[in-house]
Length: 217
Image (cartoon, rainbow, N blue to C red; front, top):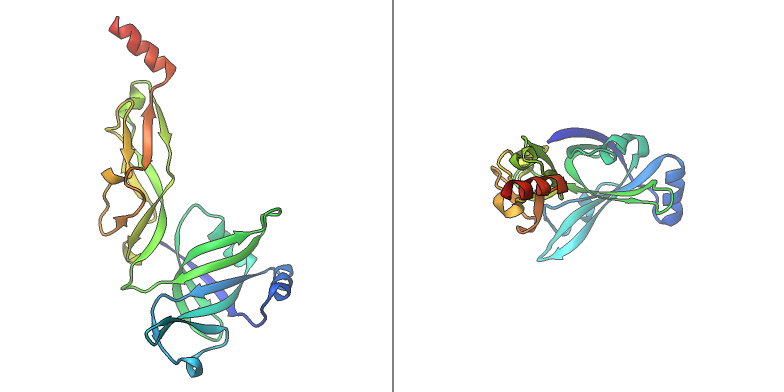
């Protein structure tokens, strides 16, 4: 994956009013969720903007409330690519994370909030990875039309093993045939999208159907 560097500041004010003021200043509220359990209690070791959500068994997950600039995340949010985000938290620490979710205003489509999930080298993560079809389908050469029904696939794996895109060769794809998720396999990652989901197909066009009918007579 490509790396995206992002500067963030621990959040000082909370609530709808505070968030509204932040957005007026070109800032966006964000949350960094940890996925590595920590031993409780941890109150005396917390930095500003951090809190712990208890998960049981005397353990919890670290959650950090942040602010980032709209300009700083623009190329991260409005991009077809996926990134490993290196977040430099002012006065605190640097962490690796992935973009987990983003919220937008229903009318203006302005960015309202971002969620990040912390990444560890030895802990698998789940991501949606873009698909790239490579080659030229045999069915298209026969007059069919290629139809890509999925643009991304859900995968699980270590961050270091997740590619920027999943290349699928379609040279063998004949007229009227499909490629399903269950037929695909990639090194060091697991596909968790439904196995029966159709990734792409070559549909019979009217011209191809007419040609086939004429040839059979």
